[in-house]
Image (cartoon, rainbow, N blue to C red):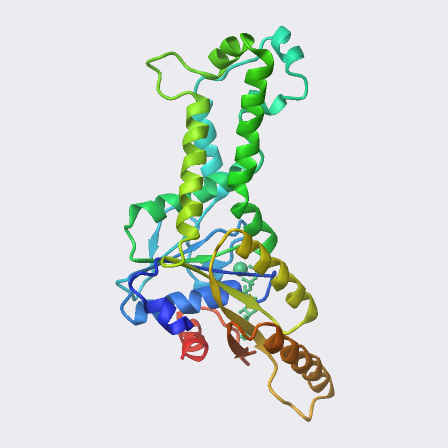
Length: 319
Ligand SMILES: Nc1ncnc2c1ncn2[C@@H]1O[C@H](COP(=O)(O)OP(=O)(O)OP(=O)(O)O)[C@@H](O)[C@H]1O
Ligand SMILES: [Mg+2]
């Protein structure tokens, strides 16, 4: 499916833009969101990159933790998800009644420090992801575009259900190993009966939410991933890794944007030499990815920032 169709197809709910650092993910995601909104779709753009630049791209503060309507639009909204803020909120809830593990038990539990805090590895990301899930599940916005972090980080997010599985796996193993001590242990992590959900229950709830998000994201009728890359060997290698992970998590991808292509400039030796390098890699990319819809986007002479230049770029990118 071409990018223009993807952005306007009713059944499509989520589009994720991802790729190596600095290749133009935020710019392409923002330009696409504006294009979709200009064509009548109610669109929310969410950044899940902890090093946000969505606000800078839109020239608008989207960092407050709440969805912001983009001025000049009735159907375009933006949000930067702040994992630290979400994590803090979660900790405040969970630690409303902190528990200390008694010495005799903590000896038993050598090396199990993570139990005392009950924050499995990657929790802040998990919480950012569960915030994203709120939007996925609410159906409040017709269409959501995600500006994701450079590949490594995104891939970690995708593997979170596995990470949490192994965390829960550990708890279950502990339970089997320590038998009746488990009862005591469980008591430590539980609140009194009328005091709301226990920490374990909250964690299980979080895990269930993350699994639900993963399911949504692997539904080809609802979700597609758009890869952004540049015509350089390192970006090709990164794209290979990204594609194989997306394949592993069954997240569909049809469009690859090859960004920052240099136009010919015979008068500039430096530019010509870079262009030769890029064109050589382009041949390779066209060969490697002939099953994909490749979109070749020139490096623009102006700085792409703010609604007007993003809108202009969107037209070039999509039309
Ligand atoms: N086709 C283009 N022409 C000119 N400038 C571009 C183009 N694409 C991106 N840029 C510029 O390149 C810079 C990096 O782009 P952007 O922030 O979108 O990359 P990113 O992949 O989101 O980076 P990060 O990995 O840091 O999130 C920005 O200053 C952006 O304006
Ligand atoms: Mg970015």
